[in-house]
Image (tube, rainbow, N blue to C red):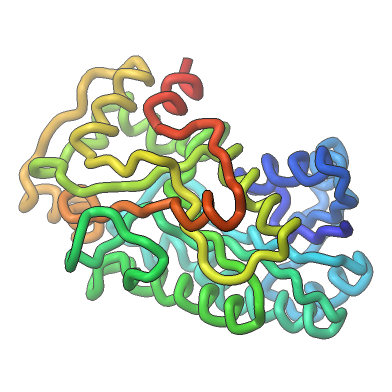
Length: 306
């Protein structure tokens, strides 16, 4: 199969491209500048420079690649984490998930490609109604009225237009693995990533390699609909954060009250750490036949930071 990966040099793309190549697929992958063309070629892909926010650039790149499937992995999440100002931190990523998705879908339609897989997100859910673990049938939000609103709007857009076009939206959990959480680990080691309140908020993690393997399956099976791509163990911050600190060789995290955390880090951080809900991966296992290499973040953190 000829697979076009938009965003091949991000932390996910660098695991996905070789995964597709290893399965015998012909991969064309994009980057935003010539400096990373060599990286994509070393990963086994035909490398192309493309501006995901330029419809002409996207259309030309897709037309030249003549793909059977398109995978949307374009993000621009870099630098020091800034949960207090998520709208600013995710500004370009939000555009890539709205304008960029629309450009890719237009290019898919122009080249008669119906197999379309896009990255969505399921690290935590802010919907407090119901249980602590959510399925694809539950409402999805990251805490209304906070700086995460724009981020959530972009995710809703991806899922809406991709599913309507007959494609699949993969809700990756909080990604970890090579290069994925270096900024967070640095904060943990400096004891600048505290537990908030009782640390009762749940999060769902997934290793990059497991997210990549689920994506390969979705491409090969021409999956349709929304899938939670998370590990088997949604966990509260009171469990995963001290464990992450121990794996990183850091001192245990400090604990701060909610009112202080709200002043320092904003409403999103407080809500995530105290009220967040996790996700179930039952649908992805059942419908895609997905098997995890790292069923729990406990194993994954330990190996990743060994």
